[in-house]
Image (cartoon, rainbow, N blue to C red):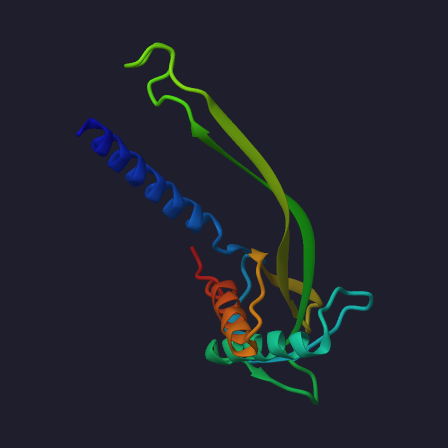
Length: 188
């Protein structure tokens, strides 16, 4: 009877830890902006590529720009290809390698030294690591008139790209929606 109670408690703790760790896999979003900027005056934008900038392959590049275009359109901005826009918009990506370490133990007594049955049982701990890819999407907006950066957003997430292009586009759309959630920033 006590063993079942103990097993149930351990199962609840494990489920709680898994839930918390799943939240850690979410995107990390940061943004910053130039205080005192009147974002209401910006109506148009144009894409600009940074010389020697980091961009993905052509297909992914188009998917990212199309997703950002959709978000900026929802914010009231119009993309222009001709003439002088209000904003110059630039994005770059970076993919870094990181190490993830995990450990788990098996066997042994749950009660430590001298538990119910003496000194407890033997246990083993297994530790393993794996290389994970961490992707960062940076989006910058520049006031063309003043030539000043007015807004910067950064989304960082552990990458596990799906094989399905439709699912990939959905993931990109979610990332850009979260990235541009605070654009334009609300004055405090």
